[in-house]
Length: 207
Image (cartoon, rainbow, N blue to C red; front, side, top):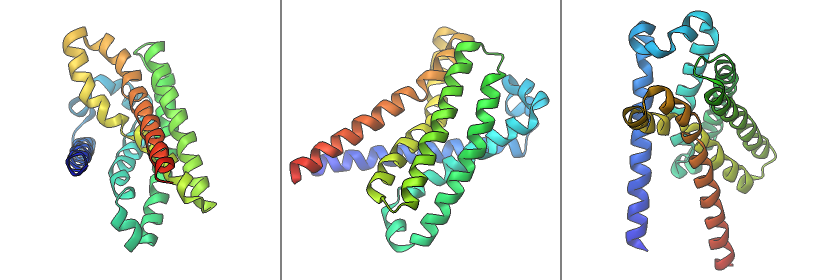
């Protein structure tokens, strides 16, 4: 059991480390012109700058906040800060999700890729809104379950950047990009459900 706990802590540490690397990498949009920062998305930045930069900003802030929302010491010792970060997280996803859907519906990567990213955006908004609703109702146990689901979708920004170079190198960028529009979040969502079911079975066994 102790070995398992160490492995879990290492896995979580690596996950949050990758998350902050992606956050830092996303800051390039603040310092570089779009043709250098993200040349494949230049048409979005030129034609839909509000949606493009809204998505970049919203998703980056949400990604930066999410590790702190799962920090148990922060929740217990700084509950007010936890709640304010939760509000920031929710607003960031509202901006990032709506603008992401707009970009997905106007993408030049094809309908299949657009459908993948649009579905992610819709689910991101719905799941996070429900997590916030449960927090306001003081149903903390249910709120935490839905926050795990929300975090899994937020972390699609990380898994996308892990999978895409591999897929592009093996299948070509166009095919890889279409696949990653689904692969960046569907396995995350399935893993979150598996984790929640595992925790539920463990709670029943303890009871």
